[in-house]
Length: 249
Image 1 (cartoon, helix red, strand yellow):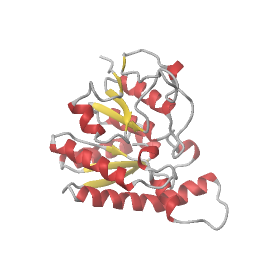
Image 2 (cartoon, rainbow, N blue to C red):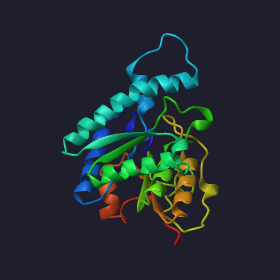
Image 3 (cartoon, rainbow, N blue to C red):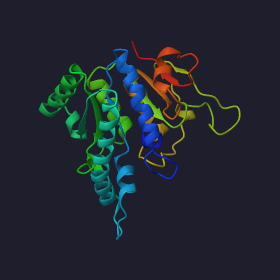
């Protein structure tokens, strides 16, 4: 779930949207789905909490605001999941943890034991220590690595638009590409513009979707600001606008 899904146009945390997403995850769990939530929003949370009296560079801002914001974000998730009687747990990770070895195995085992006990892992990059070359490109990349690590059935990338369009989404006549076959390229349709609230964008989502689908995992790009998007993707996929990358056999 990208920053633009859970922040307002002014860059503040959209608690109503956050609550709606948690409600939908609770519905998924009631229907016996295991869910891992990769959530952006820590930096946006922190930025809205305090004003800095002197100028910070981009790394300092990221470290300061994420350290403050992650506490607020996780507390909100804790309270929202608790209303449904669901336990959640925080997992902060780094890119180096996805290199094969002890850290990779420990991280995988941690998430598996959480899932086995009905706990929803809420995952984010450890922004306080991950800078420059140690950073993920964005949480799209992180979610793709987790999907592959745990051999997920489906990866859902929630954005603030309905999927990948065959033209400019703001122009009349453009429509969402509903399915993408293995090996099919959509690069000519991808806009390089990045998210206003985070580091990602449709280029990142497309690259992640392509890579993960090639590993045999279905990938969906959908609009996280649409009401009830997650249940509707399951119960009435034909009527719910989204882009689906078919997994490579």
